[in-house]
Amino acid sequence: MSDLKTLFETAVANSKSLTERPDNSTLLKIYGLYKQATAGDNVDKKPGFSDMVGRAKWEAWDSFKGLTSDAAMQQYVDLIDSLS
Image 1: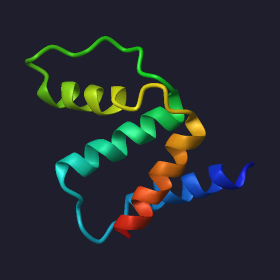
Image 2 (image 1 turned 90 degrees about the horizontal axis):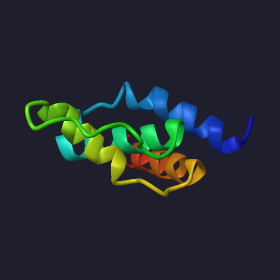
Image 3 (image 1 turned 120 degrees about the vertical axis):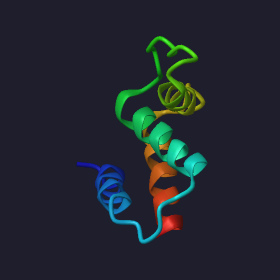
């Protein structure tokens, strides 16, 4: 297992025990980076206007389209480290 993958898994675990809850925009960035790192580019259909939460999450993930899995993992690790 690569060092980056290990750091990423540690950051995922640490994200569940942050001392303060991040604001919504930061939570969406965390979600988007996680999805990009683990699933790659977003190919899901965009949710309708009535699903505001699903739409916000879709847009957060889609904003990282084209970012490699390793780059998304590194950004995720850096973001979680900055919040810890």
